Image (cartoon, rainbow, N blue to C red; front, side, top):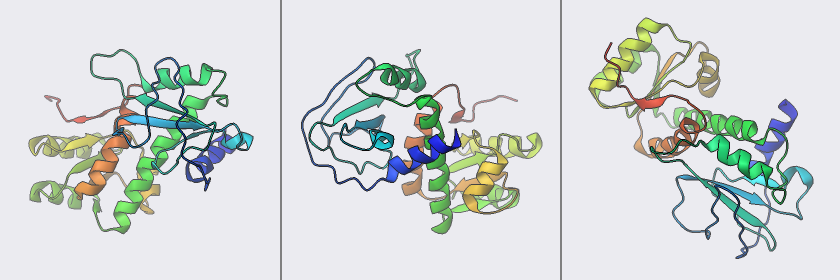
Length: 229
């Protein structure tokens, strides 16, 4: 499991010299459109038959990959609010397509990549000075109106998390509670991180795209806090 995940992470950043091409394909629940369209609500996959086996089907989370001749592009759209489908289901449909030649448990690996990408963005935001962590600093940022997104660890103490969630709701700040203390701590390179606020709208835009994918993958929680406790 870990070895496969490492391979997929390498796929995301692989320095392939793809050429532009116009050959696209489509499978169930997957529509192919030309490169350059606005596709922030889509996950983009590229299948390149001439690449080494471990790199033939890759996910392009950073939007950097073009196509070489003979390659195929698959775009999976985020389901709308009226849909009963999920990204997992669409990715599993893609994996069933023999032409795509997806590795086993492909949807699980993509979900892991998405989570890693969100945590990587948090780490970049920390380096840019755009995050605060710890209950006191997070509460102060929410009070001051400088926060644009709140992270509460899913295994954080209920009392503190609930207070910050209510504070976020009062200021119309979205709450993300899909990561563990260990994951948030690893993202910031610190110990025992339970609460984080993001304070930069540029990072927020990128984060919202990735969290939107994770939200629709299964039944994760990324929402405007709307409880009435």
